[in-house]
Image (cartoon, rainbow, N blue to C red; front, side, top):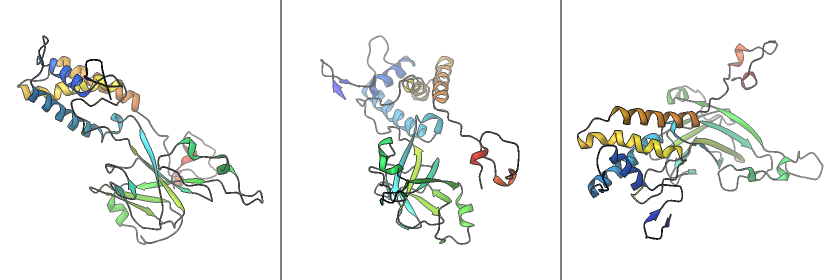
Amino acid sequence: MSESSNGTPEARTGYVVSDLVSMALEQLGVGVGNQNADPQGMASGVKHLNMMLAQWQRRRWLVPNLVDTAFQSSGASVYYFGPGGDLDIPVRPDRIEAVYARMLNGAAQSTEGDFAPSDFTPSDFDTGNDGLGGPGQPIDFGLTIIESYEDYASLGLKALRAWPSFCHYNPSFPLGEFRPWPIPPEGWEFHVLYKVLLPANLSASSPINLPPEYWDAIMWTLAARLAPSYGQEASPTVVASAKSALNTIRTSNTQVPILGMPSILTPSGNPVWWPGLEIQKL
């Protein structure tokens, strides 16, 4: 964040928190006519905005993207996600969207955890069969997520050590618990996809570092949220504008995976093909 010529905070992305809180209050008739909202109203609005963004964080369609973060296997049966954990991130995810395990096969490990095209070097695509001792090509294997702890508990041999095929994530707090199964040895790399963190500890002068379509949604939704604090019901205009702005975000963020069918329903000799057949589930 930089400062303008008059010394006031200026967001590089367009707005600061106080701008959107002030505009939200204006929809309720507070602070209109070149009158500033009272300091208590501004402070309350900032708190409501942070609580609202914390709620949005848990809705896939309100999050602009997923993060692909890697950590190395150590042969452990459980890994911890969160501050200071095996996957060291500020807040533990409420759920994981997808997981794949990478057999490095002599290739270099991910340098900074987050996946990026620069993770792949020309040597990564060496087959390792040239007789020169070059590294092999890293191979990724998607893991099937066991959604419930009850299903994971039903596994008879939890200590089985072999090629990983499944995993379970328990979103305990403050550290989530990730359990691969079967348990792979050292030398593997787990890549976990989870929702990117939305800012939820903003101050009045903090910039809104979100895509531009979020500005309108924050302002109208915050106006509807603040209305009861001023003894009002959100007007139909406010409610309709909030829904329209949220639908814009939903349209922008929606990603529908290809449907995968159980392999037992698609025998190898079946002449029928449809999109998703090649990723059928075991």
